[in-house]
Image (cartoon, rainbow, N blue to C red; front, side, top):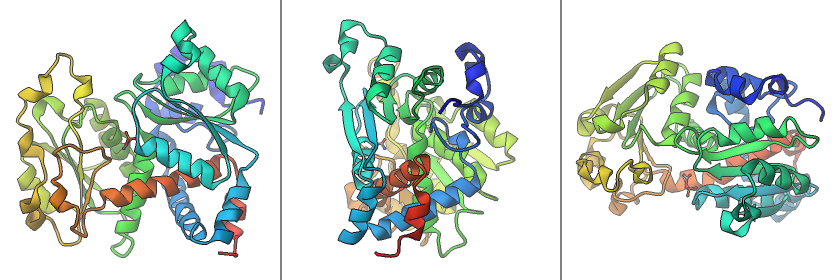
Length: 359
Ligand code: CP
């Protein structure tokens, strides 16, 4: 591929100064999905398509014949899993999705085991990976790094796709995709995601999953977004600007129990104290007010769903797990189906999967 988008003609500094929607456009390659970096790259049509494809893969994978077929789709491809920040679900679901489609995987999970420990830059590391892999799936503590690496690779002879599997405090687009897929499935018989009210709870300032999902939900008609957090950890002004620009109705508050009965979906999150400026800063907050206990089940609408990107601490009592409205363990598994659908889309094997009739 000789052209990897208009970013070829922009310097990184010029690209970085643009808004997320403009940056998303710059990362298009011939008008199709290549890099996956920002939630802003996804519109309603693409979200619908990924949901249908994820379901199709889920059904095909039930049989041995189906799994054999899926494994034949991308058996000529290799994925590099470059996870320098801890992960259980995202790493394992991408790994499983790659295997399901027959891709080989290689990985670096600790820079102490790569030549970064000898002073190699991340740019040179990623460029090295691109010599051996057809896609780099990366998680990093550095916000914007996945975008920078995608821009950098686009100026090389081997411009392979970069998938952002969580970057700093800014974005986690593939988590938002699995969250949307979970909502699509949960509200399949209730008119879909349109006109639903989604309540976000917890650390909304530093939670990248919330930031990406709030953005993806702007693709749906009439979705109201409620944000409940300690005032210090409320959702960022940049997200509210995006919601304003999209004409989304939203409310901010700190009274969880007052907002809970209005929500069709409740999205709990962990306090991200790894980002504390001073040790123990988050412990000063009265976090118990933002926890979901057994008594809150009575305040939930009968059809509502309780979500969490996980990992959790005390945000949701384990006694709640048995309630049929608790869907966070379903989210985990949905991550594998959606990520397989995403890889199939990037590597252009959606057609054969759509036409497979042997399951
Ligand atoms: N939700 C999520 O990103 O989980 P992991 O950190 O375990 O990947």
